[in-house]
Length: 263
Ligand SMILES: [Zn+2]
Ligand SMILES: [Zn+2]
Image (cartoon, rainbow, N blue to C red; front, side, top):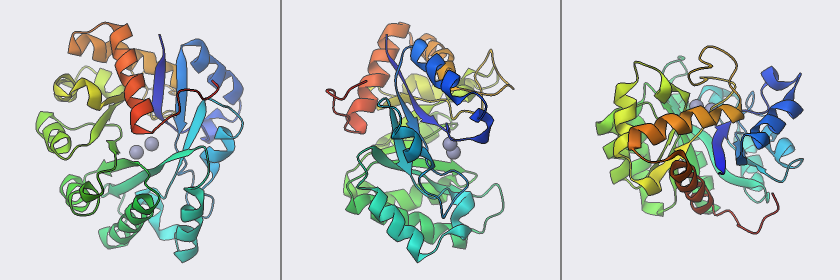
């Protein structure tokens, strides 16, 4: 059985003391790939995930400016990002989007979000979206500026209900579920996961954050994606092996992975 962690922050300082072991545990747990998210502490460094991806054949990277870091960006940041799209291990722009929870003004976030959509579209790259307390604005921007490209869009750490899921699915997006979907009170998220078509489903950890049950409250790590996979298999009424095969195939298709790559 092979699984993929579609979203992890392996560069995080919480992994500084034992990153090697964390990565080894992920491999031992059957993870075929990990997608390291390259937002780090924000600009000017956009290469935190690329440095890891360069060291391991099974780790791939995104690059992008997180909505909470947009005020650190400037025109040079966008030139830098445009260049990184060409890096062979960069398979998406992300995580980008809108976050109205932490007080960064929307008028600062919106132009940076749109600029990154433009760069991703030019490079024919999929995008990984972060949205928090900004549902309508995020979908409005994506509907206007991304759906017309026909390129893939992954809604990371999907925590909406079935109606939110339908809105995204209607736009052609893919939903990526993480540890929150295993929490006892997350019945609405599990309903969203239940109705998601099998070819539009991904799983992730968002580690070191949001560890799934039974590790809730502790540091999360990519190997724990197995717990989310087990829960989603149960919710969807399929075997764990089938859920793993579906989500791994989806990852390879959406991010245009070459199946002949070494791993
Ligand atoms: Zn996020
Ligand atoms: Zn994240």
